[in-house]
Length: 243
Image (cartoon, rainbow, N blue to C red; front, side, top):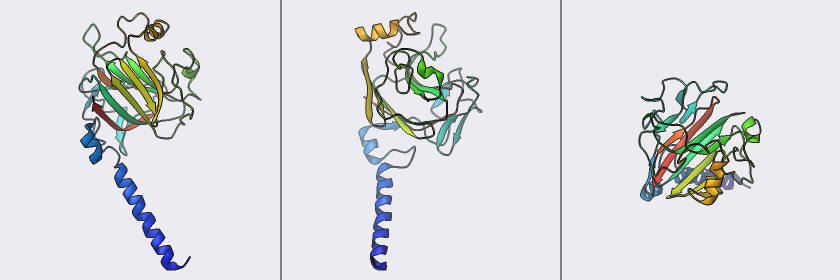
C-alpha cells in the first residue's frame, strides 16, 4: 500500500470514529434522537443535583463523590455508613437506563418504587435490580436459584444471564415499568420479566425476606434509589423516559 493510500485509509478511520462517537453521544448527555423520544437525564454528570440522601437533606458531602463523569460511592469495607441516595421526585411508568461499574466483591443495587414508611421517612425497601459481583460476594450463593445475583429482582426472581458481567467493566442496566409489568435488561438483553401482583409474584415474595411486609413492591409510584452497600461502585449515564 502506497503512502497516499495509507493517508486516505487513516483519514477515513478517524472520520468514521468521530462520526460513531458523535452518534453515540458523550457520557451524561442526551442525543438529539433521545431528546425527541422523551428521555431526560437523572444526573448531569457534574454535580449532585437531582438526588438527595435517604436520611433526609442533600447527598452527603463525603462518601458519594463526582469524579471523572461518574457518581461513585466509596469503599467502606462493606459498612453502609454513608447511606443510599434517591431521586428528588417519584416515578410511575418509565424506562430507566443506568451504566454501572462495580469493583471486586461489590454489592449494590438500583431500587425502584421506593416510598415513605409509616413514620414518614423514606424507606430503602422496595424492588431492586441487583448489582453484585457474583464471583466474589457471598450473597450470590444465598437466596433461591440465584435470585440474589446480578440483574435479579433481589431475593425474589433470578435473572437469566448467558454472558456474565465482570468487575471493573462498564455495564448497562435497563428497567422498564409499565403498570405491573416490569422487565430487566443487561447490556441490551432481556434477563427478567415479571408481573407485580400475579400468583408467581405472590409466591416469590412469600418465600423472600420481604414476606412480612404488607404490600411489598406494589406502590403505584416511587423514588429511584442507588444503594450504598459498603463497596465502591460507579454510575453514569443515568436517564429516564416516562411512559
